[in-house]
Amino acid sequence: MSRFGSTFSLEGSDVDKITNAIQGFSGNAEKEINDYLKTVGSKKLVDSITYVTPVSAQRKKHAKDSKPYKTQNYNLSVIVKPKNSFYYLGFVDEGSGTSSKYQAHIGFMGRGVESTSNEIVNDLLDRLSRRMEGM
Image (cartoon, rainbow, N blue to C red; front, side, top):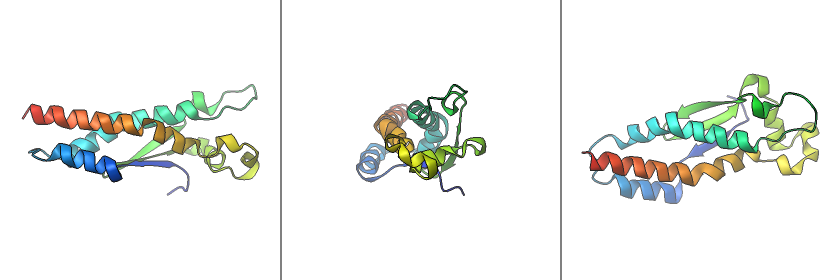
């Protein structure tokens, strides 16, 4: 597994909110959450990280315009990381090598995940409550 990437997983107060929302849920809530993360959630995460991906001043095609990220889905989590041909974005994200002079770029993948986390949790809560109403 690559050392680069950013992970979205349900944590702390988000887990509490979702736990409260699924009490009385007769379906498989874990499957609903994983399905959402695999389809809608992972796309939102990739879009959000792509939006904050730094662009150099050089006149060339930039990673930001090339769908540079892939996702790996796990139980109740998604990892977004650069595709092999865009592996260098990991160095930009961690600020190593020649990327260390661009302090503002460090952690951009994490910032992308953070910027959409609340939206994903709220979407999950809405999806679960709609499923409960339909039961």
